[in-house]
Length: 75
Image (cartoon, rainbow, N blue to C red; front, side):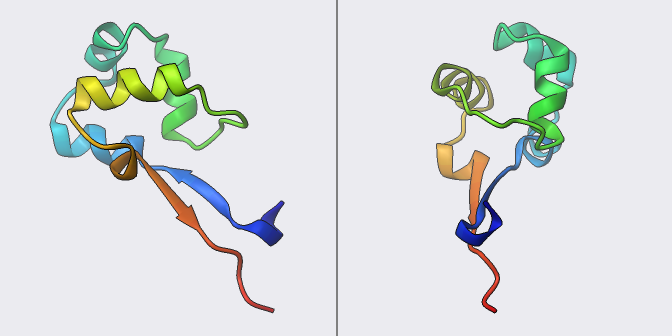
């Protein structure tokens, strides 16, 4: 799949910038702490739009702040 590029989830950076703990985000976004860790470590294979909406709402950010497209390397 790398030939098409990839999506990087920048949740870890946003959490730091917002000064919120993962536990607080977990509670406010109604997510499991382990799920937040998977998003922070970019270990998600399928994005859930409901989860993304909750994260953006709690962190008061846009989807573009949370997700970044990294194009494939030219060969």
